[in-house]
Amino acid sequence: MPEPLHALALKHHELLKFAVVGGTAFLVDNTVFYGLKLTVLEPKPVTAKIIAVLVATIVSYVLNREWSFRTRGGRERRHEAALFFLVSGVGLVLSSAPLWISRYVFHLETPDVSLATQEIADFMSAQIIGTLIAMVFRFWALRKWVFPDEKAQSGSVRLAPAPDSADEAA
Image (cartoon, rainbow, N blue to C red; front, side, top):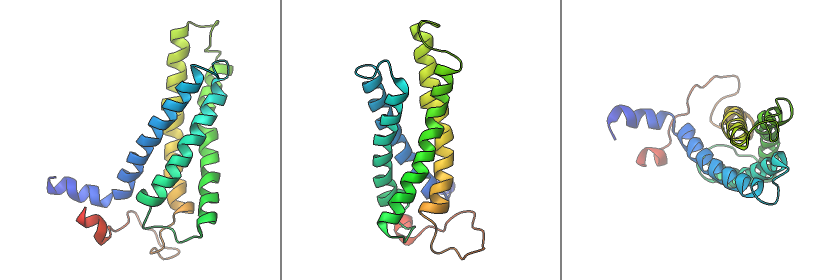
């Protein structure tokens, strides 16, 4: 990797790891959402979305705890997990709200619109807009409350965490 990119990757290693975990959770979310929405929960897309987000959240917790933010934290695991799922609950509302608005405020569902329009609106509202809103919120909240930087002194502002020796070797 060229030196400028290597330095940038080291500087933002948590964000990059969070993005990889997010991509994995996004794939889990999509698989579960469409698996349910196109079968047993066809008439209930918001319920399908909520279940999909819950499954993806569990995957996200494990991967974020063990990889993205492994050098942060220090809380008791039960407390940390409770905070993670509380933050994720807010994320669930944020990610489901655009789909709910699309379906039940704008009535972008059959028979009011074509099936193709409904599916495009569902994808854009749930999988793109909702996911992006929830992702920004989760990254901020996870770093601030769930996996705080133990090394940062209280009252000080740190723009980027310093990479540890294990990350430099990677």
